[in-house]
Image (cartoon, rainbow, N blue to C red; front, top):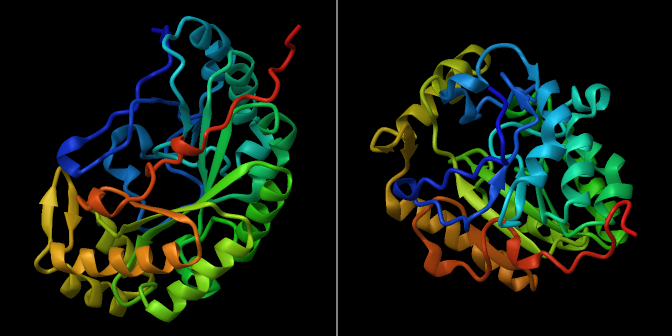
Length: 298
């Protein structure tokens, strides 16, 4: 059955989600080609197994958008990267953007890929906020935890280029993993780099392992897997996500917040139950600006 309207984003309040109402579009199903070891999407059946490009979505997105009211922001995407390598070939994300921007929907993009710069011609015509996840400046971390994603320097370059073209860019430091990318000095260096690239807002989140994470990590780094198992020994499971004790998460979030605010950017945490520390909306909707021009507008 073909979906008639854009799907609403599922805000899981019990897992401390504070996202405002919006729609959500995943142009790809199956396992994301970035292959991040910490990926939480693998807990959902639709995002397991081989990659499944949603060709039917590309064909029907214009009709779905036309039937959808109100015109809330549309996020691409909450579960799988809209600019994973397959997008270079299939251009499903691009076709979705064409339809959504033409219909006047504000757009929130979340990605780890510099491929997003390919669509600058479209993005510059809409009300768009682009968020690029940069978990660490250490390429060893990236190769281990995000083996299929572009290295950090390419993500920074993409942020800089997008900002130079006048787009609003934000960044996610997510996930922050105990003993791996939570060193305050390294975080300070990262935050300064993000500011230098034109980032206006940073959202941070600690690692919340889902089932299978430690097994995947054991295959590539058994010692690290054992160390993280110990770090999460007292974790609390909330709807399938394992949360570090609150005091540990708070220490990390407060550290990043201090560094971000010192650089003049706004800050939010994601699914941490620390919304009192936020100075802006976590997903960047507060930075959506009036649309400059609609595609094919008269």
